[in-house]
Amino acid sequence: MPPAPTVPVIESVGFTTTDAEAAAAFFRRELGFQAEGGAILVPPGPYTQLVGLPGARLKLVHLRLGSERLELSEVLDPGRGARAGRPLPAESRSCDRWFQHICVVVDAMEAASTGVRRRIAGGALVAISSAPQRLPAWNRAAAGIEAFKFHDPEGHPIELLQFPADKGDPRWHRLPGRFKGLDHSAIAVADTARTARFYGNLLGFHQAADGINQGPEQERLDGLPNVQVRITAHRAARGMGLEALEYLAPNRGRPMPADLGFQDLAHWQVRVRVDDLDGVAEQVSSFGGTVLSPGIVSLAEPWLEAGRALQIADPDGHRLQLVAAP
Figure 1: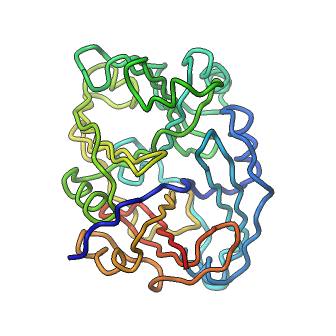
Figure 2 (figure 1 turned 90 degrees about the horizontal axis):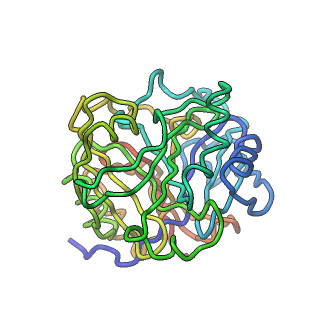
Figure 3 (figure 1 turned 90 degrees about the vertical axis):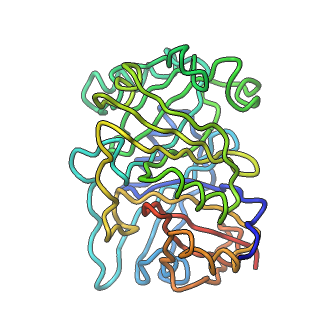
């Protein structure tokens, strides 16, 4: 087995939306994101083949928060023979395996969440958490962290998080502004060990914190009763990381839809730059993943800054776009 790539870096995280411009306006207005260039129109071609909609026309909108990029994808036309996109599954919960969120780091939870909570009270947004929660002192790995979860206007989960002085990447305590950047994207998983092998041994992420959160604060944070969730952090060479959430209780949730498509609102995508794309491609299935694209696809899109890419799913079905230089 070839060695794992040593320098994975998450270049962007994003999801499919019915209106990329409207979604971008929400993130700019409420969460401090900044526009990064204008909308990108993608015609049918190598990129649409990569993501599984060969005849589609897409619109992509890029936003920045600190050093991290959020990519909003809108399917203008799925192409001949492709089905239309579907809304998020009814009554989606944090334990369902299609669950994924971005974690926005803030410097003062009460002030940072005011606008969102006002819109929740007015019925324009839906909360996941009953209110911002401070995790208890007994939980040494997370003690003092404040968090609040809610859905964006289309139902995509978002977390606001404030680190106490002794936790988090040191940059979060140096950067100015109320909204500082993206610390991680969290994904619901069925098997922590399997996920660790996939992201660690295959892609080269290193494992950081690992522990179980439970109790009334976690129940109020997740909007679920009797929660027990194992949380394992997987960090890249720099920048944002991934956080695996294995819900041990109240239940293990529903699996990812087998026919999830790029056009569906439950579709999230993490773009990861890797050293050895060919070596990873050969080993994806050995670590429980699935290759979704027709092999490695050659690309010429200047906005992507990559000559080759591979679309895969991890063992739970979460979508990853692996990119490399030509």
